[in-house]
Image (cartoon, rainbow, N blue to C red; front, top):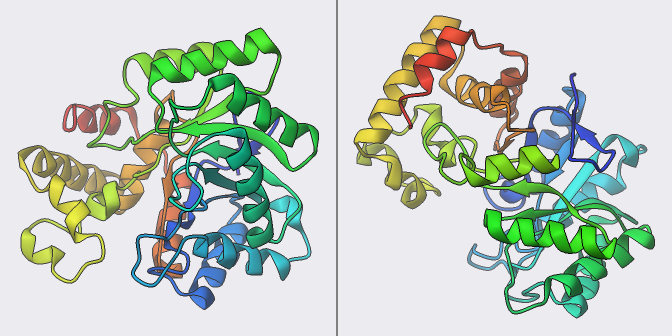
Length: 313
């Protein structure tokens, strides 16, 4: 498996990250553990989660995904063949990026994950009420203590990411090595332009979420009727428009041309993008996951990529 660097952290990952938001939610614990086993056995090594997952589910409080991963990690003999990516700041129980909250939140995540270190600890969202230097100095202390190996950001504007990188350089503290924006065949505005230029200039890894647009790019959802009873129906509905239909039509043609599924083509398109390190995608069955992992071995011909590019522009 060809690995790609996570910024300048010294860490590297296979070109697909498993999105752990489903663990303990749409995938029960036993299924989640089977998915994690299959993912690692398939040659992949990075799992992304957050302390807030899955607080939005009735009866959940947050921390469920990390806890499921932690019980899986406890049963493994090799911690070092897995990179655990988690996040802080978005959970209402522990919001923001103050030093006090980061110090408290990391201990909670380490306990739930049943590990002594987090490979990539990420600011889940910006916190403009907290000085940037306070946040980065807190992260730097965690790295020095061996509790965190590297840090990343998510949902930051290019301007705020640039400000953070300047503080890191000026003060000699840890810098964000990665950024998580929304990016897929349909949603491109967060990456294209200023963020793409900044990450290229600074050597920042880009690990976008919504690689399959909440499942829309699998081609399974083409009308309102297809959304009935689906956990992500409300999210997918935003893609049921003229642009979405153009994207699906181009995706259908590309899938037919290369003999792959729509999901595989959608992820392979992201993996082939020069600005992207690896997309994040989720699955709730081993069969779905096996299909998604196949995207990492799919090389799209230039003419196929050229046919896909205009559809979601």
